[in-house]
Length: 124
Image (cartoon, rainbow, N blue to C red; front, top):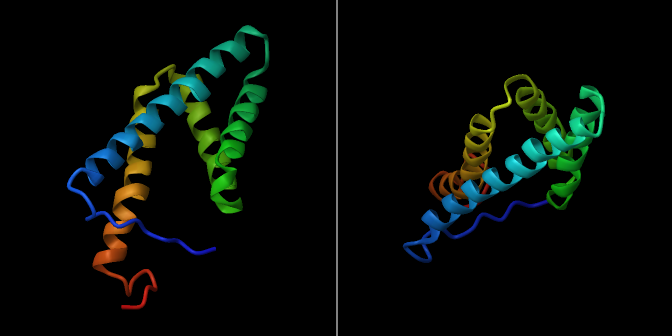
């Protein structure tokens, strides 16, 4: 597997659009895959352990296009996020965390790759 960072300097609006995409992904995924799904599965009478398992596996599978490592990473993230939501019933911290994770992946990694290629193993 090879990581190919995007060229962030192509247009002035590239970074704001990527940050908005990160926010959109956080809102959509957490509201639907955690908030809505948790409440619906609870209404169906599933146990908390089953709800956490189903949410986490779903999250892993819809991120499978990223590879096997992110598949398992997203399952772990799904467990943490599902447990947090079941305990607090709050989505805002999950949305913020998800948006920050995506913002770093979308913008932070390409910036570091361009600025410090030696750290990430890119030839100059």
